[in-house]
Image (cartoon, rainbow, N blue to C red; front, side, top):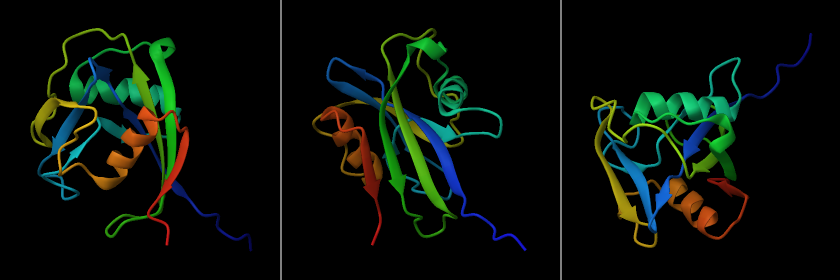
Length: 149
């Protein structure tokens, strides 16, 4: 009998940075990290790659249209599972300088704030792995790990 392989959960994130400010959303009513800030993000669905997931999720979450060619890879994080999560996480972070549409909270049932924050002064209640990723992005560090013992 073949041994079942370990599975990781893939997710795409977008770090929109403008005038030394970064766009963050505060989680609400999700059961995970509610009340804390993170980057707009979402899981990669079967049949799509990280870039496609980023484009789809940004339309769903913050109402903007991105072209695949305008999405630029900036960081990847391998994250150990946190309590309540299943499997390790592979988080891929992108940025974009161009997009269509107006940024707005498209999921008020899951997000109760969508705001720009100073890149060098993130809110205290920023999720720790997101804070780490933002620091890596600022310092052009393309890979990091979080939560491993």
